[in-house]
Length: 301
Image (cartoon, rainbow, N blue to C red):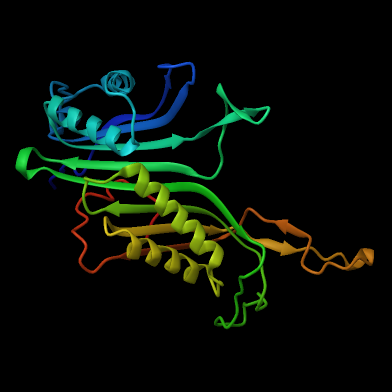
């Protein structure tokens, strides 16, 4: 029986890189969580322990921090592309690189109606993410960028129903024409190219997702996700496909009748588990091949 090494990668996970721009009295924060991983010709490191082709994970960490100063941090997609290109060029055994970045937004604290120059509060509204997968060299290089948002908590207090579903002897759920629909959304979309105004595209796509969630009368969370994804693909030709993972954050009406109190859809208990998990993927029929774009991206069908 022959034993062979399969897919492998190694890197430095979750480097919390915070860059403060102090070019003027009005400071700016870029707060990132950067993970890097290299793949390639690393058989000797696994089989014999020979590390000559290994760029240490500590070096990857140091590069992320140093590049925050040397190269600066603009759009996180550009920062990821810069790191991936550097690691493939620098690592003697590296044929591919995967850079995953999360960005945590900060809002300026208002003082007497004016935003303060150097005091902040961490913003809500979801965490921006990007994953850069880069393989090969020169004209044969293949680069994929998957950007997205996670921890985007959404809720509709009406405008959502769920009925007409299949029932068997174990079904206890009652059909409803009016319910709370809530989720903590994860959405990721793959770009067809890299000549993109990343910040503008992200802002517009996020706005589209929020608008569709709000305006679509939902017959099911699946229908809402499809509507959100379709709107993004229709309005953004730079996007090849989009994927969603949406846990259903259930809200159950509390029975207040033992206290002789009416509850016409106003008091609920929020249950964190178990929960329905709805996942969906939409793509263009003329989209470029995904290649390694989704390599190492868990949590999607």
